[in-house]
Length: 320
Image 1 (cartoon, rainbow, N blue to C red):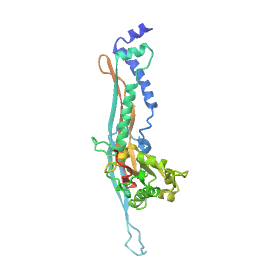
Image 2: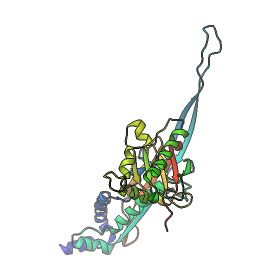
Image 3: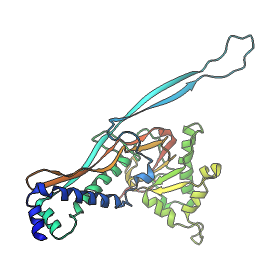
Image 4: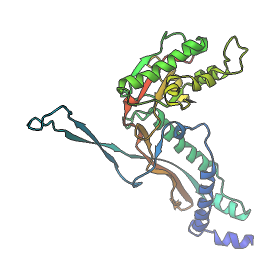
């Protein structure tokens, strides 16, 4: 049997079918691997609609202007309304990372009946996913994109008493900060929008998740209390979603922690991912070598209704 294997894979071209089959196996493993620390899909709604190879997306907005008033049946002063339409576009770009084998790796895998090493494949998959995660949260300077945590279009302000961070604030002071950023979303949209989600730095999340009400002898944490006792919940009856986001730890203008209040909906913001991670067909690149890769196409994070969100800075101290 070993002789047959050696003869069959005497040259790289003969080994290509084995490589392709192994590539399919590796692809399965890639998509089974989970990334608990890369949570951009939990924070930003991911949109995969549209053609994977499209150069971008175009969308339209409609608004109207006009009024209604008292009129007479014999009057000629009927007020008319006018509809205005606007168009905007957003470009996509491709990212990728690859790995390679040689004929020695292939023949040894076939000889011993084992799969080709998947470490390089896992590394390539991880690199693509981490790049997508980074683009989602902070954008890309190369593409002149901003992200979830640093958009200049989202209104920004410092929390009350900046310089006193959540770790040292009382429960009432923390609640003031939360309600203030939620209120700003209401006022800056003329009471149209509600922020239903609060993203905060991990240190701030841990501070409220471990601090109990009262003198430390209560059974309810500050996190539980804020989820149920805030102006959003008071008016809508819905609990406020609070999530920790690592990239917010240094997102403020002074390098400290930033809190983001927003309505988590594709109307407000979206992460364009028309082509999720895709494994390419392996190819022979040299007389004894093969290569393949993983690609994805993205347009990054787009804030379509930035006033349905608000930034609050200096929640936590800058890293030492």
